[in-house]
Length: 407
Ligand SMILES: *Cc1c(COP(=O)(O)O)cnc(C)c1O
Image 1 (cartoon, protein in one colour):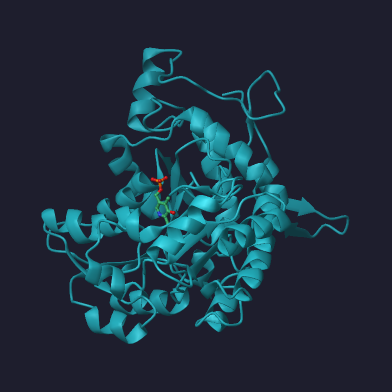
Image 2: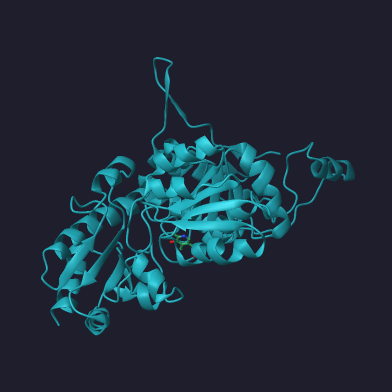
């Protein structure tokens, strides 16, 4: 094939030595494949199928002897470029894009589990992730246990002889608790299980679970990878062995493929992600510090603040405090709703990771499905809100919050 691939990620120095390129460079160049037209920006291959020069070539491609493309449900050039670029960032051997973050998480779990296996997960999970662990997997004979992810003794005590997967997110949604990636990965290694980390809340810029021992990382690319609220997408990263042998067949035959259009949006999103995420995090830290001083706010949860209960662990495994801030309004549910309704810049939405700042009341929306007891266990009160910091000027966000809280 006459595609022109960008060279591998080594920068040659005059003295003949080489070093790895920095993420900001990789996220602009890595994975680019140019067609014979020599386009600068990555091409969008909006095609479902591919044609073969000869019947023999078609036969060879189906046999796996010729590595060209076959069908966009299996692989597509634009999707491949997105996968390669994410691999460079994450330090993963291989990856597969998916139609959404939930397709990524469900495929990462389902492709390696069978009836009789046991999954151990942290109980503070994104709503749909918790549904998969708590409700869906047991329907297919996979047992599951939810533990307090902060408590290593709880993880250890819940291990069974058939535990195959340890699954968690960190920081957690919506209370921004931290799970010790290295400690859970060490436990998994001891018992011969795989660790799957949903790394959305830290963003791929500021937390590298694989460097801390995780086997598989999943993302909702819908969030900071796109970063502008346009498209759904997801990605699973891991070893070539896991991705090509287990995950690939599962995705190929069940079909939650990433659309090439969405992959292209994500690819372009990656080019600006370092700049955007740096801004999100700097503004989040500033907003968190401001909220902590307000009498109308009873509690601020931000992993980058010294008063976060796990500040030391957060500093060890995250390069920044992250783009999300949660806080409790001093008062009751109606005071909290009044604050939400009085905001003028920050919009009420269950989404996150957008250029626009978005605020959520988890108890009545994303975590409404849970029982009152389960919400209490997760510390999700009626006055808790989760704020996804956007790209607006942080002083305008602060003024918006101050104004809404003052009413
Ligand atoms: C949004 C999100 C998901 C699900 O992603 P979708 O793209 O909406 O399917 C999973 N986990 C976390 C932590 C998320 O924030």
